[in-house]
Length: 254
Image (cartoon, rainbow, N blue to C red):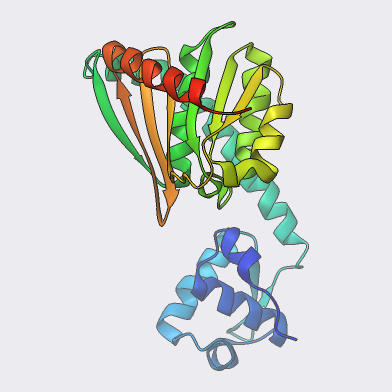
């Protein structure tokens, strides 16, 4: 059975590093010749990769009679490497936190009070949604109108669940208007969230894009073929969409 190497990629190893590392595991202690044959990596690149693996603590060498012999570190070293990366990420996180106030203040000078921004991909949808928790307060209300099953595709289901837990904790109310075909299970799940109210569009009406309306903002999201959100920050636009949302809400069924 072929070994799954995707975890090594996730760890940040390049394809060449993976080939050389696994070849070292198979060969044990070896000179560069057999390593080139086993890994399929050229001699000019093998030494560069060995140096990188050595700096990561995943390979070492000894010299016998003026000849270098290479070997992989104990595979348990991979766990240590992960922990070192985690510690480094934690350090970087603290540095980024220190930068954020400066970046925010710098950005505010360049962004007008009325803006439209596009966020690409699933992470972009999440970034746009996170804005609600930054600008809304306890007792505020948001609308999410026209939710189809496609909104939950990819990794969005666990994200939405975790988001609404934080929304409830902050005391923000939410009205959901789902497509009827998304009632099971998504509408029924949303109905169970605290500070939530759910209704459904007429049968057969399917809208793959949805609207999030709150405060001075309207977000239009789509997660069908391509995923993105368009965020419009304008109080008059938001007030207009709230009127549309209320009309649709009054026509919908619980």
